Length: 341
Ligand code: SF4
Image (cartoon, rainbow, N blue to C red; front, side):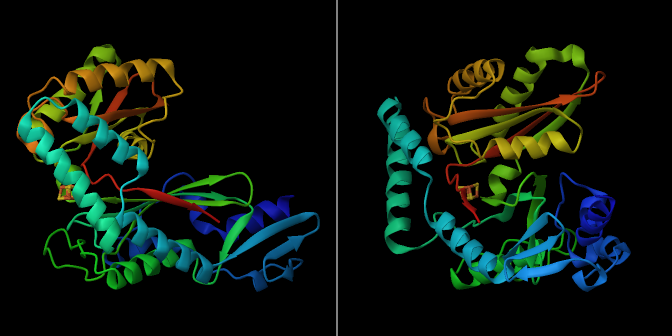
């Protein structure tokens, strides 16, 4: 067993640094970290046998091998399909909003958004000119590994290829010089290691207009639920028409300064028609949705009663002295999708 643990650590050196979350970096920002990581290969590990093209074994332990080429092809198809179509629950929420919206201008905006979604699906054109930062949430089984280029490099290659072949806009640039990286990389990768040998990849292209309206705060615990409520509503009020409403509001409460925004973004992956399993979170979601839809922002920011399609809230335990709260706003082009390999 000791050998196995040592081998897993050597085979996946990044897990040693941060098992839960990795943000993909650019060569000019974090090349230093990767240069500290030892190069490893299976030939370094005596006793491990390659049983077949799809597995390695050691005594009674078998590791599943997933081909980088298969992963690349699947992720390219995922990116292209997600960029061209709205998830069914988002489309249904837009249709409900159209039925309920009281303003004439609001109804017209909602009709145009639904027509735009139909047109994108029929033509294969992207839903929006802003095809976003390529954000991936990956759950990878600890008994699986990617053979070949590895997970992050394969996701980067798939992103590069899909954005080129699908004529999707390259939106990534150097933060100081603003020089475009030219291929929509680097990606943003959030990696969770889980039990088993599966691989689940969720893709969320995130537009800049909505991302810019997102905020994080570190409150004292005494601010309580009313502090959370006020912060979310104030964030949406300040955002106004900028995040292309109707919006979806992802809220992350708890964790740490870095984790709260991550779970706020992860909350945007929750389908709108799925009840929150936490009853307290569900009650706060309903209260916030009602309060946001009483703001006079409306679809397209032109006034109306359907500013928000849904509020999704994820909770995580936090330090007794802290109350981190993050709001990640998603626009009407709320694209997302997933594959499991
Ligand atoms: S915020 Fe969303 S809808 Fe608005 S331009 Fe960006 S991706 Fe498109």
